[in-house]
Length: 457
Image (cartoon, rainbow, N blue to C red; front, side, top):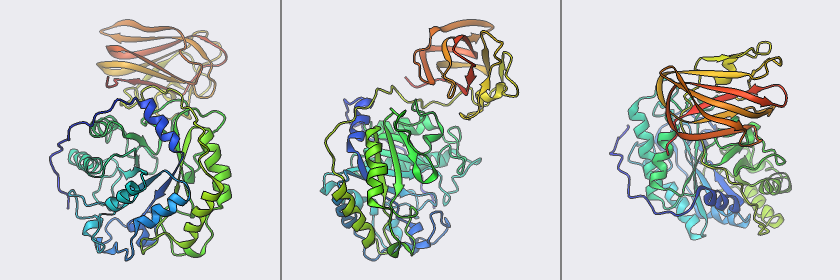
């Protein structure tokens, strides 16, 4: 049952902190606990039947303080709970649906108990929230307005009723397995909604690893889910980041876990925690509670061992200034492109296909290659992002916008950065086409994506 409430937003909490300060504070935390607990715990699956009866959730000895005591023994400084996984079961007392822990056999608001246990230890709170919701049929290719309002009301509850939230990690967006795009559910709308409630809460998309590691696309933090092969490159990474990994073999508890070895505490510290911290990446380690609602003994012992091997050395790894993340819809996505001569079969549409691994490549004989994107209707534009992910050859270029048949130059000069992602922000103009001309390059020009945006300012 879905109950839609008025999306009233409480007064904005005052803040004087910049995004950079908030990113630095998160990186300074260095190490935290991740907890996946819910219907998956009782079904033996990470992806469970979304119609399992609510009474199936019944932890008889639930004790969030046991979890946080174990986290403290590992010298963790915050805790992150998966408050709603993809099946749609909510771990808090929500008014939006009866499919929640308060209505279960347990009859408890697990999020409140988790947050209370963290607050008692003066530890920070972080939430993991799935925007994909199979119980409520919030699925790709069929999103309705009331479902977006449903998501916003759940986020309003989470950001209003449980105190300050350091990070909101949203999962299931723009991922190949969920297929919920930033157009299906507008990222900018959700991002700005959350920031109005808690402006100091960092909002991140867990699936951001598909974007280049040199700019923040749709996230206040770069993310790496190591369980699916996303690995941070310590030598080249400079963005404030978060990486997650389970200490057991999967995110949710399985029956063999009490008798199966956890991942090695030495490897967790040596191969994950230490090198990630040096790369301005905070590490969160998942521990799955069992069906009683407790951490298994082997997991508790592993956390204790990690605490013996690692303590915060107090060294502050300074985060680079990232500027505002790109949160607006890409107006050039899948739009028609016109280009100068291409190399072989690396044709024009690769530059606007929203796939950063496939470039348009200019033919070497073209001295000043150009790429033009037709936007259709005239619309406001105030940012153009160029990604030459591999070659990084572009040293100077010109950006023009067309309106009513007339071209206006918005930038003409040296590239503002030697990095592969070049962000160009300018005063709003109205355009039906955007053209990039590369005026100087060192090597063959490859444009992986040309993004066009109308950003909130």
